[in-house]
Amino acid sequence: MNWLFNQLKAHPELAFFLTIGLGYLFGKLKIGYFQLGSVTGTLIAGVIIGQLGIHIGPDTKAIFFMLFLFAVGYKVGPQFIQGLKTDGLPQALFAAVVCVGGLLIAFGVAKIMGFDLGYSTGLLAGALTQSAVIGVGQDTINNLPNIAADAKTQYNNSIPIAYAVTYIFGTIGFAYVYSSLGPKLLKIDLVKECKDYEQKLGQKVEEPGVISARLSNVVRTYKVTGATYANKKVSEFESSFSREAPIFVTRMRHEGTIIDPNGNVVISPGDVVAIAGNRKYMVEHEDEIGEEIDDSELLDFKIEILDVVVTNKEYFGKTAADVIKFKGNDFRKNVFVRKVTRIEHELPIHQNLKLNAGDVVTLLGRLEDVERVAKEIGSPQRPTIMSDMVFIGLGVLLGGLIGLLSFNVGRIPLSLSTSGGALIAGLLLSYWRATSPTFGQIPPAGLWVFDSVGLGAFVAIVGLVSGPGFVAGIKAVGISLFFAGIAVTVLTALFSVFVGRYLFKFHPAILFGACAGSMTTTAAIGAIQETAHSKVPILGYTVTYAVANTLKTIWGAVIVFMLV
Image (cartoon, rainbow, N blue to C red; front, side, top):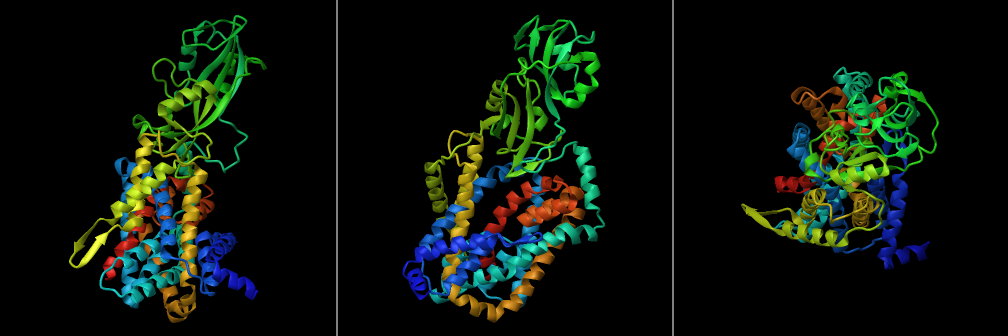
């Protein structure tokens, strides 16, 4: 065992990877709604292994952290900017109000408790569950003038201590308040409210990898015998059905020959039509159409399911239904919207669901039609393993250079720091890509590596470096920090609930999702959806998450300036 310890001390790169492995293993531990998570797990692993006295230079930590923040900006940029420009503005404003409230509550509690610069910043990071505050706070402290190097080291080592002490209750606390205590205080039946809202939307969200046996859109073949549609043009047949639930003639056996009809083809008695659309409407009009038959040859055509990133400005703010409406000569024919995904969360589809830049719309239909519509609304998201490293490298560089710019307020120089600049660069460049998708491709798996592993590596190094002083710090202020964290978490959670309900007057079905998004707490949105037996709360989560993720990261610098 001594041999292993000596090797880890002599080769810090090995200690680093051991920390990553153990950290992600610890992070999988789950009790009820609460899961330790890779960040906290990695920090704990780093602190334990760091007792050996592992040294890793600060430059390595900075590289991983900048990569992480660029990925965060890239992921939420389109939603953040579009949310500020459209009807998502109330949710964006709500997130900003809650974030400011959380900052002031954390600042007030820290002042009352007499915590120093490091513990106060860590309190904000943990109690408001924003890991990125650790790095931004440390960068800001390092750039402060007139503070001795030893004091900066002490403050920087105190931040992860306070974070670790307060984060666990922060996660549990927000999940409990938003899924249980909040609805009780407001006397809201969350299950009923979500069910009513779901019925209003007319659509449910399926679990990943699971679909209902009751398929809404199907393809069936009918032999046209009814007088209602015989001798009618294809366009007349299609226009007789609801635009909200359209039915298309995809192919037909016309006078014995299989054709791909246009709107002017006349349906003769005895023709067989393959129609695609809403199953309910087909069944209701079956007697008018004719007898359903099995024509396997007519049905032998390719169907495609394709994810498309919305990048055409014409569709920003348009509804999902607008995607399948006719444009020109049968332009949308044979295409359906299967689902809409925003910041990795699937949204319930309904007539008033408006699309934002960067949304992923999943199209379903005949291959050639899906390809045509995909090019119109945006950029097809086909499986790829390639990331645009030119875009990433120059983007992080540009952001870092912007972050170095500073101005003085009194004697204090204010700047975004290189890490904050990387975040802003990710936001702006990802929105630019959303409107010009010819560059900057980062596949989901690559983005996950930059996001999750970037933060995990940063936290691993933080844990390893601060490990020797961690135990002493816990003994000195651990109990007071723990209760201070409870105060910040609970007060902020209650503040967000009452502000959302009585000031912004959000519908109860989306209120708690908006609260969870404003605290960027994934565990909370999961608990809310489980309690509500519905995915509807996610409608309040995405815009607030994008705004809050950005603001709370910046708070890492703001709270330092407030306390100096």
